[in-house]
Image (cartoon, rainbow, N blue to C red; front, side, top):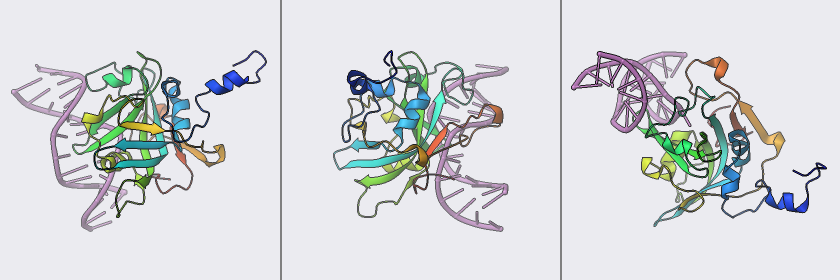
Length: 207
DNA sequence: AACACGATCTACT
DNA sequence: GTAGATCGTGTTG
């Protein structure tokens, strides 16, 4: 921010939202308030490089999970072995196992020591899924399964590892929709509209 | 050591 | 719309 409110060239160059399509998102992108990171992750490209292939998909649905003040967050009651990544440095992965058969991928936000994460809930496959590629990865379990992610992929550094996110053009505000988060216990009052998705995308789990 | 349950998905009525 | 699959995790005893 500048004193006048008009972004200087330097401030603009430092803005983590600025488009650098194709390049890895850097640490400063993740080291921000969770809701802003969630919003800006829409349209970005999730990438996993393996010996076989490089899988890529466009992120179209996310949910923000704030730490200590968010009763729906795994981090609400303090760190445990499972949730430790949420309290660690930004730009890491947090993968957890649910319902005895599914994995969910999160991106860790906020500064080191402050809990926060964005759940990746839906994506549009782009490359690396073979001839019979699915048309959509709608739902966090399906997304993680399509990428072959397990708890072995938790706490990986997205800025340095083979699991990463590449920059891509920002989704326009008119195409972004918000709703309450999915699959939470009662606590309707605490279920804020922190689910963000791209209107009309096949990769969105529900509308 | 035992227990209750979950940031889900699929199949079936 | 509802039930069943299936097991790691956190909590309680």
